[in-house]
Length: 472
Picture 1: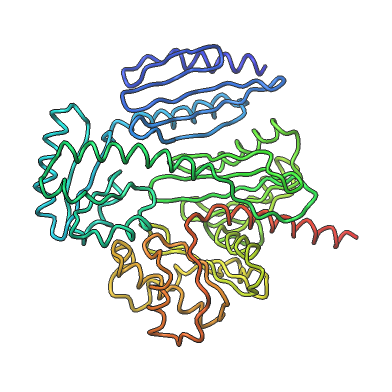
Picture 2: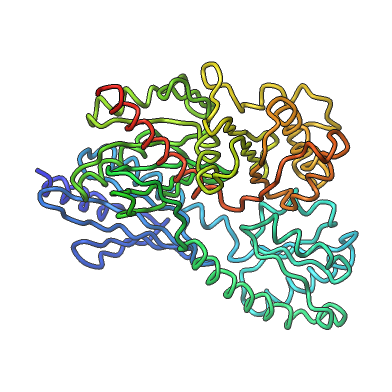
């Protein structure tokens, strides 16, 4: 049956007759879909009488992953739905220029003239590049739409701050000699060289291992769901007695609860069994089971749904709560900690709180949901506008933290906020409200997912231990 379904799905893919992409059958287990802007590989892997299908898409612009998922092929309609979603992402790559570069100076006038020269030179060289210019006051508002941020020497003092804030962008200062002479050809060569090096370094950083292990004797699947302005990323690790035996990253434009089913199905097929599943997700999590999240209509009882389907114990938690537990494991010297996240482009963040070494969830999971009060505070502008400037982001972080710092008095704050990467700046802002003697220690978190994964794993271990104690 599995082989029949696999052959039917392969045939269905190959029968597509479209000008949007080219279909290449490399061999019996690999089909490629290619366009001028990227390609997607569809790999079929047989395990006993079952098949795992893997979609893996890269953009030719920077060789980066734009879409990745895998699933056990058991439902033809589900497989076709995922295929259509993948194709939509592949076709949309044509809307991205091969390289989009934003120039900036104090007013945008001088870089505006240089951008026109660069655009003309790129056209003569046959390069599909797009150059635009903006005042430094509007960099953060425009940055999402660009791959490279190129600043003039006169605002070179902003370079390090921009690098710390725009971690998904290549940020460069135009060499003074190039800018002084408006040497467009040398500027393009400089950008190309730096762009290639940047993505090689980025891949190495993404492949780095992060793990703070809690001792346990079980096989635990830990899943962390993280959303930003254009993608959903689902990180997962399978731990077996404190050793990571499988890990991966799912990248999609839209999140669907079936993405989690696909992960679990695939891991079970590859590894045979799981003792427990931990899921760290955005949204309010009530009683380790019910997820109330704006992008998911209604409430989802993950614990009951997943346990009924797989007969495996499930523990669900808000991802900020999981992150603060992960940070607490790394810093056992603190008994009270606040983890605050202010994602790039989002006017309202969230918090996870540990008090007396235990996570605080509040009634029905409301603890840390600062969205319920932030928009009613005395802010100088709307949160969605404030987050687009350094000063505005600092105001948001300060006023988001203030109530918690006063109510809890934590020993440490772990801060993930790309727009305010300088924790001393945040402390300086808080000093206008709170005496320095009462301020906690601050730590900046560049990548939250290792803490989320480690935290949800620790919560699963504690859950197992508590149940074992109750049963004995």
